[in-house]
Image (cartoon, rainbow, N blue to C red):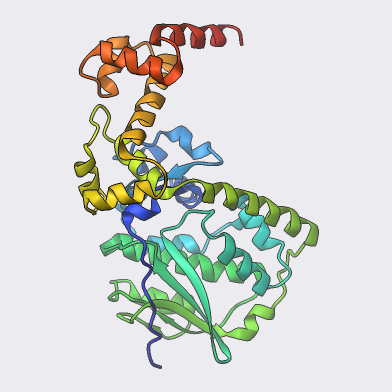
Amino acid sequence: MADCAITHMSYTNADIGPIRALTAQWLIKQLAGMGIEASRLLEGTKIECGWLDEEDAFITYPEYERLIANALDATQERALGLKLGRTVNLALFGAFGYALMSSRTLEDAANVFLKYQDLPGQLTRISMKHSGPERLIRFDPLYPLTGRILTYAMEEVLSTTYYGMVFLVNRDITLSEVCLGYPAPGHARLYEEMFRCPVRFGAKGSFMRMDAGIFCLPVRTANQSVYEYCTRFCEDMLEGFRKSDQFIDRIRNVILTSPGKFLKAGEMARELGMGTRTLTRRLQERNTSYKKIISEVRSDLAMKYLAGTNLTIDQISDLVGFSETTAFRRAFRKWTGRSASQYRREMLSRKDNR
């Protein structure tokens, strides 16, 4: 059968910013059942283990890639993504998972997934296309991925999608074909064992093909009232997610992951893979500037250091990028309308009165 041409998504690292962490948290919890500690998986990131219990946590793409690399190293399992997908538990994905499980039919569940797929935070984008009597589910990396990270990300989404569908309708689903846009890995035979259909590697894109009639199947846990509640909840979460500007979030993340060092505009532009003029223009479109973002980050950090640490004001001044403490004191008064010392006393007083 001829390849179905798939247009690669036009996202870049700079565009996507941090993504929601439900899928990353799920990966860590799955490996905990294999005796692998979270601290080992989070090595090389700036994430603390308490992040695992945060319901609205985010993760940056470099941290997610490092997490996956650590997982592959710790397990020594090259087919990790495929194997984990077989045990997917949709309930672990909160309202998003329950919206899928309470859908009336697989078609309804697919529409829920496509609309709210930003909520779990994967490294891939899923889309669907009608192809005569068949349905094509396409899988595209959210941004350019390579090597074993690409293989893991694609295997994980392929496997969780297929076994998630099987779980929802409580019966086997027959696929016509699976195509992957990367070379066959050493465990290629496992694909055919799992999906029980022809599998082709090195295709023009990654997708699974199946009879469209499958989507008329009822979901075994359908519940209209739960569906209505959970989709409303997902809509609210998605709206809040969209209100955050991912380009600015990406800039803030670069700043925050370089403590004590505040890149100049030209350096930040190079970090984001663009020219200084492009950076300036894109920020002007958002009614802000690089200088303003730096000032906001410095202000936020200074207030957190003053309220939550015993660092001296001189030390905090250095950490937020001021060469002279007097300049920091002036800036802090401009930011908050009070002195750094006064702000610290107020925060300590609030803690004492709780």
